[in-house]
Image (cartoon, rainbow, N blue to C red; front, side, top):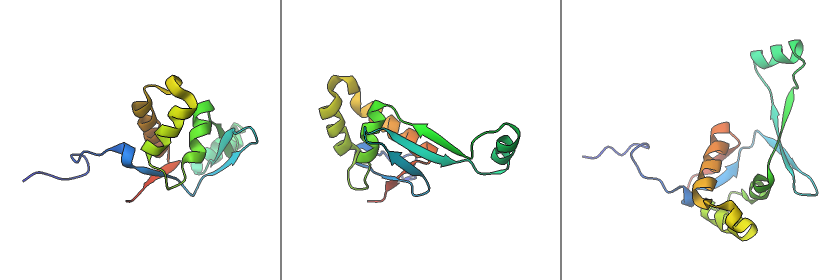
Length: 119
């Protein structure tokens, strides 16, 4: 009998629906520039804030393609849907599109900025 845990089941990330994680706030400027606000919590961050004058809130500025993608993460569109819009906007500049977009979404998930909605 086959072992069907998460690691052995083949997953098609293009079917996943990404959602912004509620704990992070973000701003979108008039020009479309997105900034994610991350509160630096915990003992080590408090020490760094007091000793090294590190900020209580970090501002993460996204690049051009990420600025386009971030607002498209609405809890309704799949990664495939987003890839179609990215291709329309950036064309060949976005290639290799699927691998690049899936890896970007994995990175956002690993950082805790997004999660994937259960279908």
